[in-house]
Image (cartoon, rainbow, N blue to C red):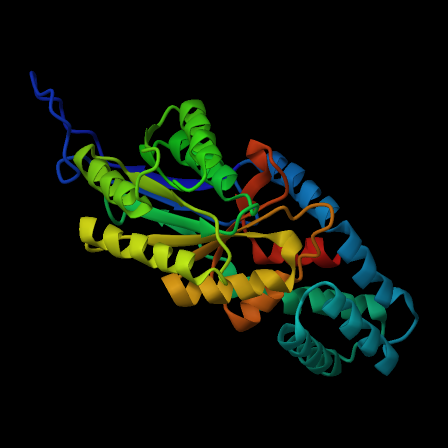
Length: 343
């Protein structure tokens, strides 16, 4: 489960006979930080989740660890390590950075044993990933408007459902917006999540996605919601007309609330390798991303693409997922991820 640090000011006394919705300005402010921690409040649950992550990245870990099976640190080891990192989707830029940093640290420390070198690599990777470890903050604005994008099949709508559950469990009032009006199944799926989490949803069959988003933000303000989560249609960055639709949604949201959207999240599939980096670059250029959710880091996912993202487009990674279950989406911790990838 997430580690929450929340502060909620006392709710003002109800006014007898006041049946009208409470405006955002009159409701008590809600503050929530979804904080990545190495030692959360529920260590047993975190360890269970970490075990799933390690299992998911097991093939990559075994491949890279095999490089350190020799008896000495030499040029052949560095060449094999470079190949293993590239095969793990780390990318050329991040691989070169890690190898250069590793050589420097090994010389400074006088390292001669491969296993010692491996520990240095874990540290170098953790340092590279550290800028991605940032918390998601809810409550600076009311409502906090979160726009979620991603290609079809990345797990976008499911991730929204999981995030909704955790926000609701922490005490935040959430309003969902089914702005993926191109696909009826998406609206139905989001409606199921709304029912499961007992939250409200704005959904209009066949309506313009931007109009649905505008209505949701307006409704969120009128109803005093803490968070408005907007699900947009999945699309590839090469589909220029659909990317323009996303830009339109963002512009319309800004008309409904001049400071919104406060968060623009991209959901990426951890199985797509370097293509995930290309998606981050394209969506960031179009929308100005504030955070990422990386899903499906299990089975065939290599995981190294997070290093490539950190080196070439360091957009914060708020959450990573290893499966479909509710407890398989967690906050990102750089050190934990580095250990799972290289253990």
